Image 1 (cartoon, rainbow, N blue to C red):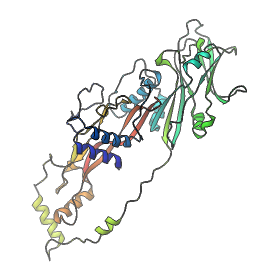
Image 2 (cartoon, rainbow, N blue to C red; image 1 turned 90 degrees about the horizontal axis):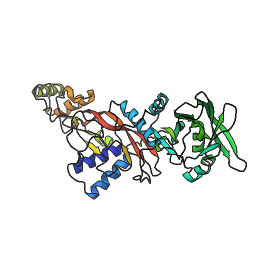
Image 3 (cartoon, rainbow, N blue to C red; image 1 turned 120 degrees about the vertical axis):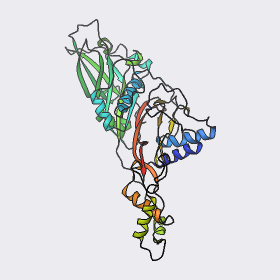
Image 4 (cartoon, helix red, strand yellow; image 1 turned 135 degrees about the vertical axis):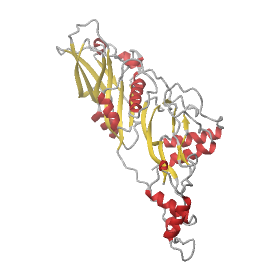
Length: 420
């Protein structure tokens, strides 16, 4: 089933003739696309209408206006790696390349395949507060999870911290890094151990800590979200400043700063409202009538089929897929949509008349309906040209809080058309 909003948006698009344009058959999602796919500039009213319809499809109440659009910090780069991972599964080329080795692990890929939405969160402990803790033996993190939509279940959540190579320590020296949930603030601070791991001084790369259970708890009870504390100990149990072990904080390079990521999956089912049956009841009163009195329907069908033989529809006019490109850049959304710049939506159009050719992808019911329509057009309408296969897309964007979100949208691209 095609979402009602998508049908509405495609109608708007076709009505304005703004986004339909011929494209190469081997269209890719590379960011090398420079030419505009608009036949003319959208008028302001047309642009607003188009924006409203597509925002509705994307499930957004309004256009996000992020305060910061920093795309080269660790969280956006990780999310871009996830996005590239998602579209590679769909046989597309990566939209953008990220510097350095991929940040996405095989486990992240498994989490992604089971999720329909991924959100990243930046640490809310500001730079001044982090500098105050600079010489202490722990580090604090706070994340605003209020942006997680209702009805979404956290299937996996991670705290990701980068560890640099430590030159001034012995390479075989080890440290234990522990992450605690803050249960009670000062003066009677209470902590609960969530995850820990042993790292080598010579180790370099991202450390990943599991926060799945705690994140679900915070989503259900936001008042219990008092943040996290990271502590570090030597092999002899001595507490140590995380900076001395190479753990990068908010004062470090932008592409190595810590962040949190949550993989989400819709937990509820949305029931479609029952359509009115009045139209069907009214149609039931019309009986099929013979075109000529005293002539059997089978004889009429045979004659009409013989007369139609060899008069197949021109393939150019038959039901098939046509080009339709939706450009986010032409809608003025390049400031909050990271990828893609647009997508090929396509649409179905063409005749479904007797006899139906094999390329029309007709159902058995459509073949019978076409024959009956050919015999008596006033009784039964022609089948409709409609999508038979639909495909989803992934969109990577900033929300109002400058968090980066990767969301999968089903039934956004027409893959094949047929007569129904």
